[in-house]
Image (cartoon, rainbow, N blue to C red; front, side, top):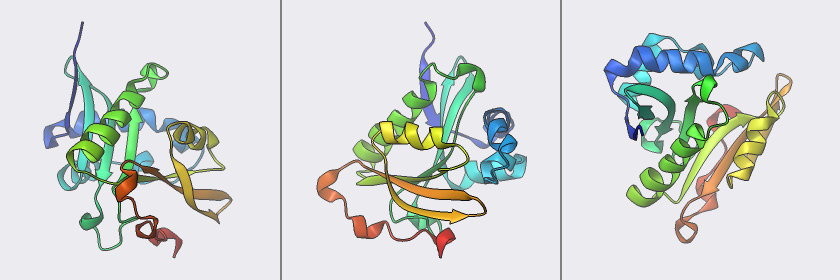
Length: 179
C-alpha cells in the first residue's frame, strides 16, 4: 500500500502544484468567482510556495492535495490575527475519497494546534456562489464570524477554534477586504 506523505511544497513542485490548482479550480472559474487560486499562474504559485507554508499531500511522488497557510505576520493587512488557510485544492478525480479532508485535518491538528499552538484557524469562502463549501466547513466545526455582500455574492469569513482556552474572538477583527 502506498504511503501518504505530508510536507511543505518546494519551488521544484511549482509546475505540478499549478496543474493541481488549475484542475481543481475549474468549477470556480466556471462560476466566475475571482479568487487568486482560480487564476494562478506559475509565478503566483512559485511566490506562494516561497512566501507561505504550502502544505501538500503526496502519494507515489504525485501531489494529490494542497492547502496554504498564511500567518498574520506575513502581511501588513492580514485577514485575521490567526492563521488563514487558502488555496485548498484536491485533484478532481479523487473527489469524495477523503484526500482533502485528510490534509485539512493534518494542517488543523498536527501543524497548527499541536505544533504551533495556534488557538484558531480562519478561512474565507463564498456563501452564495458555491454554498456547498460553506456547508462542508460547517460540518468540520467552522463558524461564520463575518459576511459581506458584494457584487451579487456573499463573502464569508469562518473560524475554527483549535485551543478553546487560548482563543480570543477579539483577534478576529474585520477582514481588510471588507473595510
